Image (cartoon, rainbow, N blue to C red; front, side, top):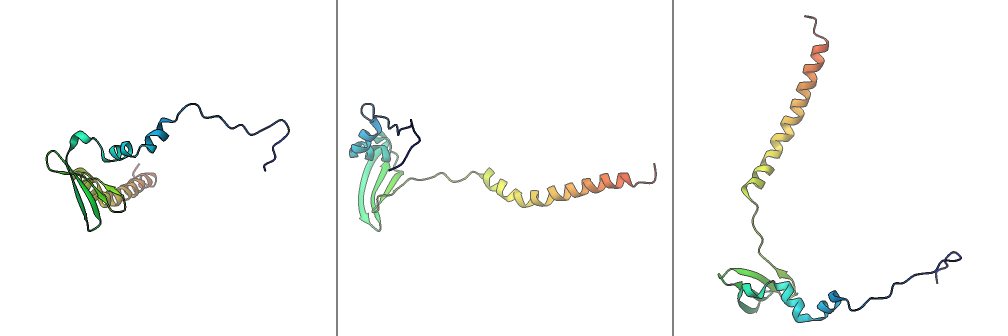
Length: 119
């Protein structure tokens, strides 16, 4: 038991009404529909039960919407990175060279200005 200073007590709030999140989680069909997305986009659900794959959900245009593994994990396709992301990653080595090189060159130029005897 915890001891509190005089005049203080532990205040536990009372739950107010029904929790809609808990009700939705209790409804397993609603939870499964939420996890798999919009049923209007599905065309077919294939029960595979081979090689670690339990079900495959297809869209109306015959693309894979999701794959459910035997462990219950739901895998969805992800979009590949755009060309700009690859170019940005390839430009980092160039920037890592030119930024310090330019800074040192600028510092040398300013320093040489202080010691120039022609003025």
